[in-house]
Image (cartoon, rainbow, N blue to C red; front, side, top):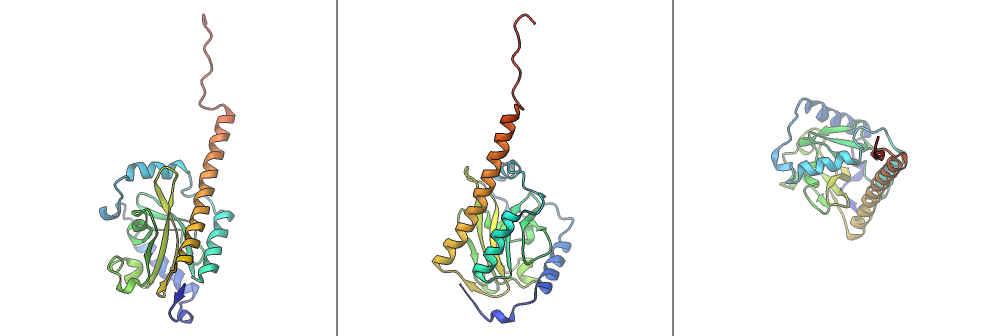
Length: 215
């Protein structure tokens, strides 16, 4: 993975301030642009709620994955995101202080429209991103690589993504590594879902008691 002039990167404080301004400016907007809404949005949102992860507390397991991504790719930001109906919520987000963005303000909303990786190597010259507030605003995003967090039944909950304010390129080895990290995130979510279902079944909830004849 390569970057141009990595020593010229902004400080963590500058990055946090820029993202906070974008997050604040988007408050009050409740409807995302139709072009970033997948055709299966109703079923996809049902899948999001099935995993019961939105607004859950910080979690060391996911934080370790994003911290590893930061080190492996030498980027300032790595995020585990979940795309809600009007926002992109960050389950883990080393490098930024905010925990959500307006759905229109984040590239993860575009990334979940695809089955595979969604990569912008230089947003300054990529027509897909020129108007995005992360690119056009003070944050000055230049690089984004997101791997959809895809459920076993084919719904994209969000992404594992890495970001930088310098252009980057990914080779095949880098891409495989990022995909493996995203798979670990999704495996963890699937395991937690199965554990909750098992606990529910063991508790006997949802099972009606037999009715005795003649009662």
